[in-house]
Length: 293
Image (cartoon, rainbow, N blue to C red; front, side):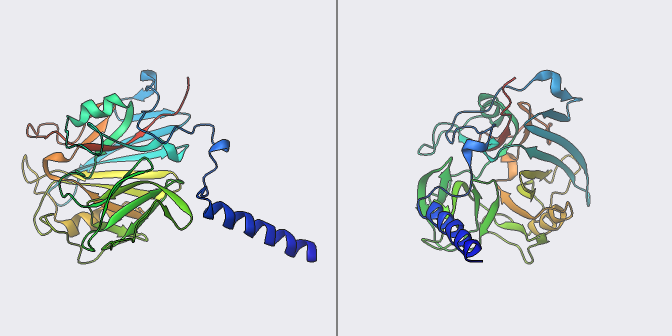
């Protein structure tokens, strides 16, 4: 009995010291597919493993694409399953301390992305919590915007109306690898957020929209809809939140939309391909392979 209590105490102490020292929960030494926490890309795709232009699978990643129509609006979605949390990454056009932009497809090709989406246009607001690949570039929160935190295990946490000092490199004992500042949250604990709105999001108008969602451990979805053109009406933010929740996701977060909305598979944009007004973007969030063939 005393031995069991002593063992429990030792385990708790080790866990406490690990969190306090900043080591977190992720055991990189036991992750055979771990990629460095930097801005290097993934391993090149094996073209043989691209199936019908809508699916890619190797021992470290599986991506499948879907499309459909909902309430007079076209939509596209990607389901992603990865082997290592390090395969969910971000990168910018020219560094997160610049305002450089480039075509999203070119940026996705540069890092060998299997699946990439537009990010949060990080330099547009001049504020927020900008943390990418483990490095904080800006911490200027004012309590008006939801922040998405992606930790070392690849799990999502949303801080609603994030206040100054409410976000940091470590949250709940885990290292934060990436943080997105756009929002708002669309789905929390599997339920659509009610009365969802956001500044400068045209929340009550039909628009082209994009989100990133977590389904379960190392399992995600990226979902976007068309804008009010080419036979679609777009979606309001509330309609989009309800629609995204219907996929059974656990957490979903709104990202930059409008003409920045890009779902990129194998270096090619697959959503709204007839939209000639797609703009250059500052950053992408992407999933890559970690398979050394």
